Length: 141
Image 1: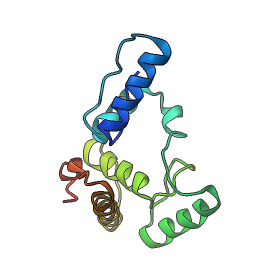
Image 2 (image 1 turned 90 degrees about the vertical axis):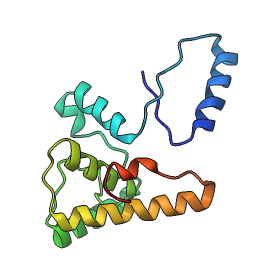
Image 3 (image 1 turned 45 degrees about the vertical axis):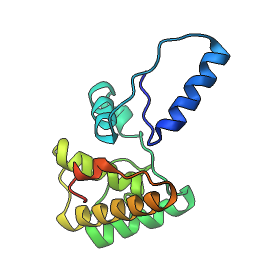
Image 4 (image 1 turned 30 degrees about the vertical axis):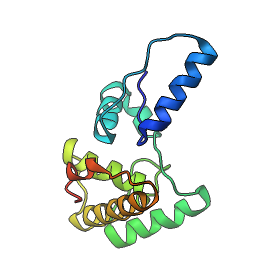
């Protein structure tokens, strides 16, 4: 099992809790960034799992509306019905899939995805000072 989180402090706190709760155990590998996480998932998960896997941040009641906007504005229909395609997690996945796994998305959609990721990075830096360094890998910075 692997663990990824954008906060090393959270992981360290969890690990201390785990040791106290369950005793010494093998520590889970800490992944470099989201790109590595998606790479592992794509290599290990069967295709039928990938079709329903997601980390979309949009509430269910708004997903259909976002999916409609995605289709009308960018001519994109995602295979995964659980994804809105326009929150920062969906944008991240789309850019990673495009750059590293040959997913074919319209340029306008990918440009919007990068814009979404930069907005998220800027708000996160303002909140806790943690820069999204992996965005450079994605060409978003």
